Each structure stands twice: as structure tokens, then as C-alpha cells.
Length: 257
Image (cartoon, rainbow, N blue to C red; front, side, top):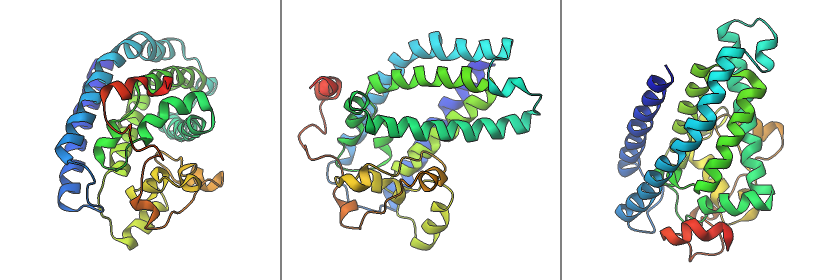
């Protein structure tokens, strides 16, 4: 069952990625500041490296945790006799809330920021940016997921469903797709949009150290972390250091520098 669901997750990930790539090709919000084919190649290489390395923590940490929950019914949700639908809704809400705080911690704790800042070194923003995460951050995220699985008691199918939605949201809100203002305002009431998340990638610290939501925007509203950057600020993305955007060596060693 797990193998079937993870294969479906991979197929969905690749399909949705190319859909976003196609949409931002024909309906771009910003002009690209660097060669697009180079961006696709560089971030694609990172994704391939990360995928191979992440097989180990997935096989030896995440999957065993899901199997233990399935067999022993640990966790908060298994202390009461919820129906599957109720359990799914509660799980998805708690997971999204947890990843809001995980993202926020990655910005506020210096050790985690060293790894997460690799993602923010990108001076542009498009769907390929959704592939740009340091392997150290991904491994720590896997450990965080294991803690959530045991604490909440998430069923296998619900966890993988959330992973699919999370990856789709990640690709969507990093994409360089122009969305009409009226439609964007409606969408932002509920979910993170490209414009919403572009605020989070500005060089300006006030908006970068905010807008932490991954899927639902309600968390930034509840915890008062929503900031709206100006159009000019959304044109200048990344960090103050513009020299480390590309380069595989820079990618690996940046957290140690």
C-alpha cells in the first residue's frame, strides 16, 4: 500500500510541476533575471540529488513510523474513536499548523536558518524554486515528520495525501504565474498564492520574516505574521548576498560558511 501511494505521489509531483512550468511560460508575472533553461537544469540537479539521498530517511524513518502507527494506533487521534473522515480533517489541519511553525522556526532559529537560507538565496522565484532545498533541511524535516506522525497518530493514506497537497501548494505558490488581482484576493482568503508567497521571498526583512503558511493562509492571520510587500519590493527577491545563488559547491557548503 505504501509503495503504491508513494509512487502515486511521485507521479502527481512530476505532472503538477510540468503543469506549473507550462502556465508560467505563457502567463508570467515577472521577467526572468537569469536564463530559464539554466535555472531548470540547476534546480533539477538539486532535486535529483535530494531524491536519491532522501530515500534513506524515508525508508528507515518515515515509513517505519507510519507502519508502527498503523499497527499499534499510537497518537492523539487514536485515543478517541473518530470516524475516518473526522480523523482526516483533524490530521490535515494539525499537519498544516505544524508546518506553519516548522517554517517559522526555520527562520527564527539560527541553526535551522543556515540550511533554509539556501532556499532564499534564489534571486528570482518560479516553480523550479520549489526544488531548491538543502538536503540538511530535508533530513531535519523528515525527523520532524516522524515526531508528528507519532504525536498525532496519522494514518498512512492521510499523511501521504497531505504530502501530495503540500507539494502541489509548494509548486503553485513558488510559480511565476500572473493571477488577476480580483481572483488573487479571493484565493488568498483561503490558500497561499504566488503573490502571497512572493512577499516571503523579498530581500526586505519585514515581509521575508512573515507569511509562513504553507497551504492555508489562516495561520498567518491567527498568529499575526502576514505582511504585504509593495510591487517594487516583490521585484527584488532573495538575500543581500547575490553571489551564492548558483553552484553545487555553494549549495552544499553554505550552511557551514
